[in-house]
Length: 208
Length: 173
Image (tube, rainbow over all chains, first blue to last red; front, side, top):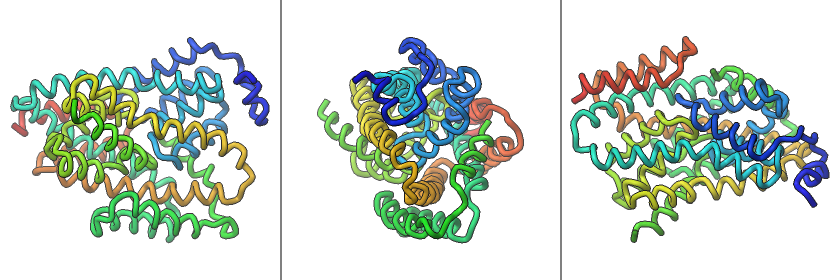
């Protein structure tokens, strides 16, 4: 069974014919120009607005899945999008393409760092960069939190996770299993929390 | 070369903790990379992680820099594969399954529950990171400035990151 029929058999919308070369180059470009974090916003601009390979709703759905699973949103969305566009090979190509530029960038940085980390200028510059990274990461998560945390339980679970990590030093797996399980149970179907798609939608739109 | 099996073990394990993003895995990464394996000092890990924020593409490719420092280019490749392949396969498989679970009511509960915990894990990671990265008044000012500007404008963060690097050269030596 070819990839296209495999996708069709599951009742997904059949994608316009995208060549593997096209797919690779599009993701390679995103991987190379997405400076400053926020790769998801670059993906959305390219895949939804520019190429029109996905609708807004399809992109949001892929974002929700990516958020729920381990792995970075950027690479997870690339895998899901690649799979829907060109099956298994598409997923592999998209992942490879979005990762390649960063791989060379970071390997080169490692070579430079091994030579330079004793030098005071490089260390001083990285101290400044680290400070800005704190601000950047804080603002990213502040915005996500602002959009998606609504009720008392949301705040409680976030607080429980933070205390578990930083105060009780429980480690990520324990916090994830315990707080995650309680959270899933609290948001169990008949409680009917707000539709997650809406929250996702809001924070995606809030990304620049 | 003798570090390769440990690199594979550590980074494939860490990759499974990156719920909602790479920051969730930072506390565990600090323990394993700095305290258990002694691959980097705490300050070096902060530097490498910060360099990841300057890279295009997935910022967590900073794992390749750790691999490069520990075991050269082959180490970089091994770390990248160990970090991106296991979660990649998981996403690929669950991505297909998730489609078929569209009508399953627990699907939304899982997304909502894990999404909320992911925010807590990221904040927890960020606190761990900030404790090491913020070493005085100038870093506090740079972090606050970046936070405020990014919340109020659409400026690309890369300019604030590079600018803070320049400030660091002059003020944080």
